[in-house]
Length: 124
Image (cartoon, rainbow, N blue to C red; front, side, top):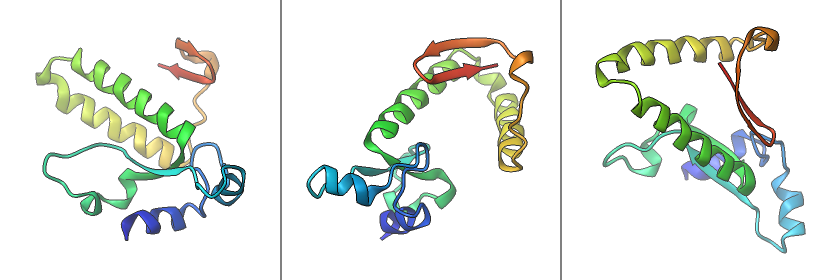
């Protein structure tokens, strides 16, 4: 089952905060408290058809944060005229490359803070 594969990949830990599902399971009385977060939803795509690199093992709290963040990203994309979506897609691929290579050491001194909600800060 795809869900179990993703949880195994993550070592039964939240891929955002590192919460150990086994410890959470004991604390919650048997409920693991981990969910598989889909980075996107495709029309007529079955849960097991998504690529592994679009699925994330998250604890309940981080899953809610991820859902909120995704809605915010979709809202920002909605403000960009569709004729520019291809350009945005290319920019996002560049960001993915930077993150994947571990070069996400963007200087916080040279960025603009645009959101100050709790520990979730969005930088441009």
